[in-house]
Length: 345
Image (cartoon, rainbow, N blue to C red; front, side, top):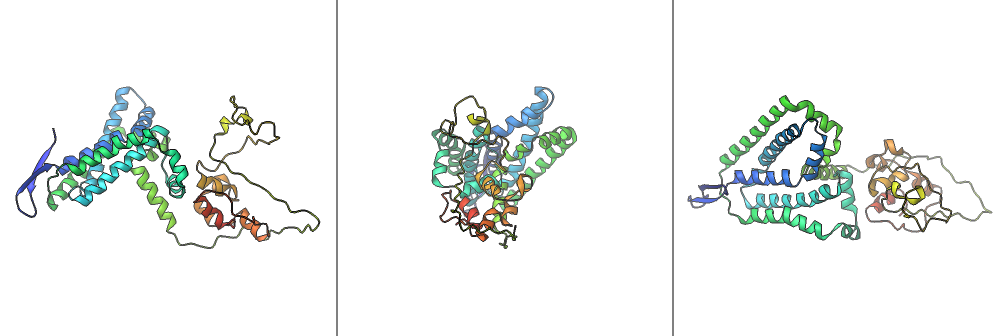
């Protein structure tokens, strides 16, 4: 049964029947919280102590809080075509993000957004599949189209404000109830499983996009000099040395046969005299973080993209010593910008 409402039309004064904006917001919020967060709820339930009843009780309470809070935030948008379009886009984007969070275990943070923004069409095409298209169609496009096509009852400004306040008051009440009854359990869960905040759609990608672009609008500053006294000893009788550095795509060290993995995954390197370093760790799981870290003196513990952009690194030292590479490196777009800052362009 579809909840309907009838309110006076602003132009004619007649009462126009249609889908209730209040129940539309609750439906959209429930759809996203429950169907676009399978990975989140899987992690949350597995982290809960106690019986199955206790686990589902905690999940039901948290789901109620999230649905009411999201519905309250969406309610001012659901009242005009522009706002409905924004909500429809939210449904589609949330479905796309949910596909990779639920199916691939992707954690969405600003480093991931940075890689998405800076990647090229070839890498994007490798992530697309028919299963992703069907998933986004069912979880995103279909509900978005229904939301745009179904008639929506008009609502006055005061009524919109009242319903928004009602939803947010309900969320506050549920939040207080959870705080009194399950604060210890929920606090421990989110403290021990910090990946939950990176799995919760749509908060994860909204926060990540904001963090990415907030960092990019900072005023540029001259990078801090590093090893400014470095110099290259003259060797007039020696032939110039050329170092070739090949940086590959992300790979798990546990799956390298050179490191003892059972399957032959490094057949072209085996028997070539290649030296395998087993005790090496990357600064991150994405290229835009790991590659600049390789040339930085900050170390893995203190490294961040922002800190690296504010100081020189080994390539700057090489340029001062007249050892700048003669050609442009063959690197992917986006990462190229990081390398150009340190004199590889």
